[in-house]
Image (tube, rainbow, N blue to C red; front, side, top):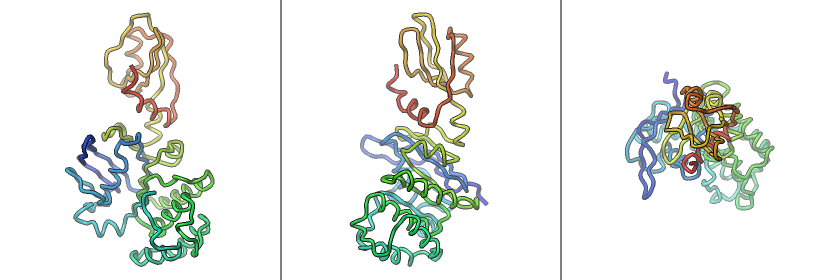
Length: 294
């Protein structure tokens, strides 16, 4: 059995003024995988491509060994996609939406659906047009989870949710992957949630993958370095060194500890080097600002 739930290889999608890829992403089976990046990085485009919402210009996407285009019908039976852009208002009320969607999926779990309605405080007769944005988000999650999909793809699933509702949602996602067979791919701007709940992550920027791996290993790999030099000192480009700020002879940089850059800095005249552990949000901000820091 393939140990990966989603494999993206050489994916390219071109738009006027933007290109996604070439992009390679590997989502292990049984993982909660967080896909993060700045606005416009290509996260939603990549997720849309997985589910056949748009045609890729090059590359291959496989979900549980199924080709995302050739096996599209079968893929949509085993995978579920939830996005704040999905609109259920045409069904009028919550009960009609549930009954309509349920008919397409043999694995629909009525008992779980009823349980989620109680957790998310939704009622059969609730008019969808009158629901708050957060409640509409919960409805999308209910429809996606009740199918008991093997792969659940979520684009900004906590948009509009309060802290209690977010805890409820992530609690259900953790239950989803308990058996090690089901997988969640989640895109979110809430990096504290991603760091807490996602065991793997990928970070994309300008359509390209910057980092991928276990969340704890990626966060542990980088440090914020502050140090001093003699006036006039300059540093050439070095792998694993990202200069974030310089104030005369005082420097702040992001360093990748896997590259040995800390020792290299000291050989180049860096003094009083202090290292600070980063949160995922700190790391994200540092990498996002990299091109503007000189």
